[in-house]
Each structure stands twice: as structure tokens, then as C-alpha cells.
Image (cartoon, rainbow, N blue to C red; front, side):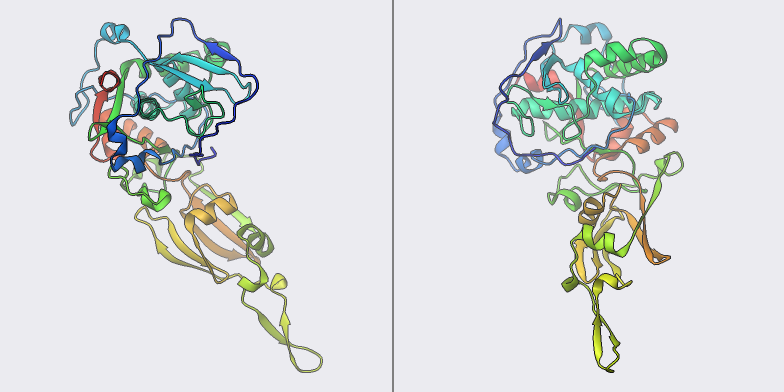
Length: 388
């Protein structure tokens, strides 16, 4: 997944873009950006959604339209089925086509791409609410950022949310071994139909990631913008159930220097005595010394600043330059090389998917899961905001 959202709107349109429209799709009910977008939450709206994709799909249970501290019954299926849906236009990156389909079908495709269908139903429902909230925020704001063509609302990549097209679901999921998983995904979407998370009456930036090393992260530690509902919280549930929670990488000193952009001027220079008895500098490229010192940690126990070879980096910079799974890592020397061990997978802001599954295994509801990972949020029907 790669994780960073490109917030620049790409205005150049390809010469030809095919459009695929699903049968039964309702006309898209567009809204011009409301006045609230000019408020302080505008900065939060521009936050990227960093998503760590997982194979399979997840089904999170959605809290009711009028949230309670614990889960409340979902609206009757008949009433939900009658409610009109906005349409979502998805740019399919492989084919260059645009698939336009009803909102809830789009959420099913995201769920199939973002969370394993083997996860607990309540975790899948929580993921469905997060996915629906993400696209609701873009639709209401008229946000087309990061999409190659202006006709599309969102792409099918992790730059926004990973998405499995309806054609692929029908071809690969509707029968065989994945049939039960697809039914579970659709159940999670149906039971949370129309429900989104809001803060002060507006859809939140519902960021999520694969797993943490025990704590989530404050938004400002990754995106430099403090968002009141994206606060660091304890997340111990994934520690015993996440496969490959700790992953180690081994680098030579020369590899590290190259990837981190450390030249000889950045490195300490050793000296030895030559044949003449005078001090002769030893090339930094041949030096086995590349000292590292952690300078500070974030609230989420990740590396905030680290000095490597005399140069200070943020944990995020090291993670991205070295291709690490997480900025929560340890650093040690072993056999003349450097071993870096990471804990968890993803940027760490918002909901931990494996943490959500662990909470669901302990009997927590989707409402409880979402309220834990997104501080102070409420639950609202998307139709309520679309009517404003």
C-alpha cells in the first residue's frame, strides 16, 4: 500500500476513458462544498489516507445512526434498502476505465480489498464504516484530488482505498472457496448501511492501517496536522494474533549510506598512520562505523527523531527511505552489518485492522471498536448530510 495520498489534483485528461456503469445505479446526488469546509477542519480534510492493504476482505459492524456507548440495533433492512444511494465513480487503474456504481456496492469492493474476509464480523463492520466515511467525505467536499481524470471520484489504489471491481467480485468471489467470504462482506455492509463517522457534524478522515506495535499514533506525528479524533491510544489486541508482527531487515553500511543519502561529508572520518608515520584519513566508504542514536519517541512509541552517521532523520523519513513496514523499530549491529527490526505495519494513525479483529474476538462491537480508535466521534446516516 503505498500509503501517501497525492493531494495535487491532476487536471490532464487521457484521450480516451471508458466508463462502466452498473445496472440499478441511482443518479449521483452531488453537493457543492459546504461552508464548513472553510472552517479549521479544512486542514484535516486534506490529510492523506494512508492505507495498508491486506488480502481478502473485512466486515466491520456499523454503529447505529444514533450512536450509543455500546452497539444498537441496525436499521431494518427493508428501510435501508429503500433509501436512495449516491453513486461513486471509481477510476480502475489497470484498465483506465471508470466504474460507476451505488455507494454500498463500492463499500463492498473496498472491504474485499482491504480486510481478510476471515476476520470477525464486527471487525469487518467497523472497516465498512471507515471505508464509507472516507468516500462520504470526498463526495460531500467535491474532492477529486489524486485521481487521473476529473470524472472519477476516487481511484482503486491504496492512495485512496484499495478496491476490487464488481466484475472481479462476480468472477472470482461469487462461487467457489470465496463465496462464503463475499456473503460475509455483504452482510457487514448491509448491517452498517449508510452509517458514517462524524466529528462536530462532519465526516472524519477515517484513516486506518494494518497493525501496530501496541499503540496507535497521533496524526501530527505523521502528517504534521493535529486532528482531535486521531489520537494515540493503546492497541494491545493485535500483539498475539498478528502474523509477522516483528520483521527484521539487514543492511550493509554502504547500502544504508546510499538509501539515506549519506555522503562522506556526513560521516565521521577515522585516521590511521601511513608508512611515513603521518596521519592518513580512512575513507568513510570503507569505514565499518555508522553510529545511530534515537533522540526522541512519539506518543505512539515510534521513532520521532534519530541521528544516523551524524545526520538527524525523522522516523518516517527512515521508514520511507529504507522501505520499512513501520517507524517503530530497533537498530543494532550484527556481523559488521546493521539489523533493523520493525514492529507492526503501517503509518499507525487511526484504526488498527488487526487490533479491530482482536477486539472483536474479545466480544467488542463495531461501535466500541470505532469509538476506541477514533476519539470522540459520533455516528450519522450519510443521507442526513447529503440532504443539507
